[in-house]
Structures are given as structure tokens and as C-alpha cells.
Length: 114
Image (cartoon, rainbow, N blue to C red; front, side, top):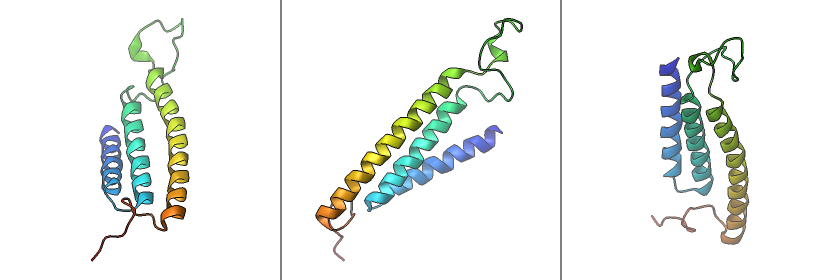
């Protein structure tokens, strides 16, 4: 399970960085989204991979931290998803405005001369 999660994080991060380096603004926005998904998965995995563990402490089981899932990474990832969605929406609005004013969606505002 850990190897699959590590591969997923690596593929998402690699694809995101590759898209960030592309010359079109839409590809840069998609790259930022993929990179944020990779970071979210990384933060989520830092809370230990435990299947079927309760997220809160129950008095009957005691206070052993190995029996419970850590709720802090889950809360951080949920907050990051909401902020990432709002940021992506803002980037798309700026992309549409820049495309309307400049006539293209190239990162530096003009096509490369060949």
C-alpha cells in the first residue's frame, strides 16, 4: 500500500512540474493543481496509513495513540482542498481576462518566433 501511495505522489508531482514548465497558462494551472494534489496526498499520508482506526479517542480503548488515526492531517488536507479550489477558480478568471485582452494564452503574452 505504501509503495502505491509513494508512486502516486511521485507521478502526480512529476506530471505537475512538467505541466508547470509548459508555455501555455492553462497547462500551468493544471500543473499547479496536480502538484497541490500530490502535496495533499503527502500530508494525508503523514498521518499514518491505518485502515479501520477510529479518528477520536474512546474511553473504552484507552489513550494509546497507535490505535487511532491522526485527525490533524485530515483537517489540513480538507482545508487545502477548499483553498486550492478557490485559487484555481481565481487563476481561471485571470486566464480568461488575459486571453481576452491579449488574444492568446501564452505565459509571457506572445507566441515564440520560429
